[in-house]
Image (cartoon, rainbow, N blue to C red; front, side):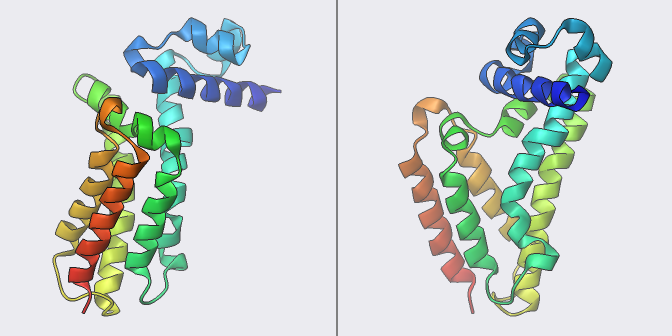
Length: 195
């Protein structure tokens, strides 16, 4: 039951924080939607901040990192790095919330990193994890001669910014069709990297 309570709190916090941001989210609403009394929350988390930091670590970042698992070292295959990145972006395009409402990591980093060091540290570290997975995959593609010699960090930054740049624009400018255009341009760019 205790684990269930903790999970319900995290799930409820995800909905609340994704919709209203950290500062606009209500602890009372999180508790109500989780059907958890206030005392139970404080058994698991000392504060709303601790709850949301756990949310970033366990749910938000974890949910995004799952997309990039095919690029991890043990899953890599010669000659398939670029196609795997395209497949990943197509999988992201099927997540309507991400495409329409943006990346929850990005929303929190925009809101909280400038004003709270704890948020800045965890959010930056989660972005860096994703960036490193991509950079390692690009280095692997160079090493296995899938792509020509290039600056792996610059290529990774371009890929990363193409995906997260789109996922950070306003809801009024977002659509699945526009995100698919980003993927199409990434594919064109990848053709210039191939030998």
